[in-house]
Amino acid sequence: MPTDTIEIQGNWDEKFDALVEIFAQSLKAGADLGASFAATIDGELVVDIWGGHLDEEKTSPWQENTIINVYSTTKTMCFLCTLILADRGQLDFDTNVADYWPEFAQNGKADIKMWHIMDHAAGLSGLDVAVSTEDLYDWDKMVSLLAAQPPWWQPGTASGYHAVTQGYLIGEVVRRISGKTLGQFFQKEVAESLQADFHIGVPDALFSRVADLIPTEGAATNLSGNGQADSIAARTFANPAIDALTSRTHGWRKAEIPAANGHGNARSVAQIQAVLACQGEAQGRRLFSQDIARMVMRERISGTDLVLDTPQRFGLGYGLNNPDMPISPNKNVCFWGGWGGSAIIVDQDARASIAYVMNKMETSLEGDMRSANLIGAFYGALTG
Image (cartoon, rainbow, N blue to C red):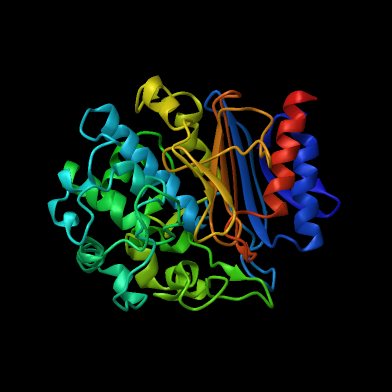
């Protein structure tokens, strides 16, 4: 549909016309370069749109099957893997991580619980041993270093965003239980089950569909912590200091970095997270029980995050709706997002999932007004 010279592709229920107009205006104004947005209700897509371009010269349009690195929105895919294992009775969130991964008990970590690593409360947001970006591609090295790493704070007492380490921590537990890497487990048990185009470790055959992330002019290309160099935040982001342009490399795309390098689009993110929105079942496939789905919405830790320096409430991995700064009018809502702007909202009350994915990066780790405006328009359409 042309919207004042901006061509928006896809399909949507007409009650979301205002949302589509906001999406088009974001592209027209230059806030977005290329992007996709999707939403489901009761597991069915009610909005599935895309538009804009893959390059700053605007010579290549964003395609229906374009996929891109969504950074920490990938974490929500890891969480679903743990919910499946919990439903099968193979994982307990109140059990010590070392029960599944004995080597993890080193250096005062014997009593760290599974929910601690789910909720960034394990004290392992970074490493004391210097690592390079290329080291992130070496699974055995990363999990060995994390097994030996002492916590930076008393586990379970506070959250401190495990920006990159969380994926290795969760992934190694999944591997010890299932015998599969997290990327393999996710692909078989989640993505293929729901016929969704999302990948943690991109196959060579799909590289032609992967778009490049584009850091905003004037914005830092490296994640960095605020405050003094020896702060938990600074140490978390400095080792290694990740450059957004690394996401364009073959090594990054092929690796399994389950906290940061998942590739998909808004459609696949919304389709996958619809299973949590619908209490464990979507597209006729039940991945876990209603009881497991409801566990996500129970707060386990809250307070000012030691790394993000913002108020956070965590259930099982996902951030929970904060009444002081609500992202939804409903209570049973969880969310997360990725560096640069990607976002996913899961609303069990509305049985809805809402996803936004883009190539033009902003500096925030926690979303920005582009997704916020679209999410607001979605809820406005539901209540209007």
